[in-house]
Image (cartoon, rainbow, N blue to C red; front, side, top):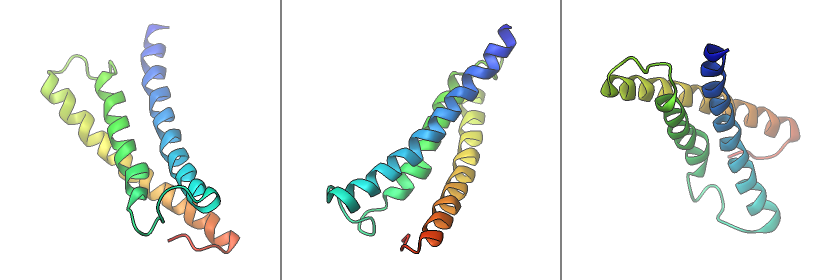
Length: 112
């Protein structure tokens, strides 16, 4: 049971980070386009903030606090967690953009 909990807790954290980024992105776009709050998306690169930077920091935070690499030195754990978090964030960014692009094209709206 303990090993199952040590696996599920970080995975749950990664899932929450994966849900928060696109949610913030969609809320920001909705707020500007519907409520006229904020700035036009082509004036500020917030897509990179919500879909790349936030997941990278979130993934790193979850991975560095997990018990997966607890037997390693702190420097090694932080470095490996940073590299893995960056790879996850880049993959997540491309997957998110493809999902949003597909939805935008199917609805006939301008995505960029």
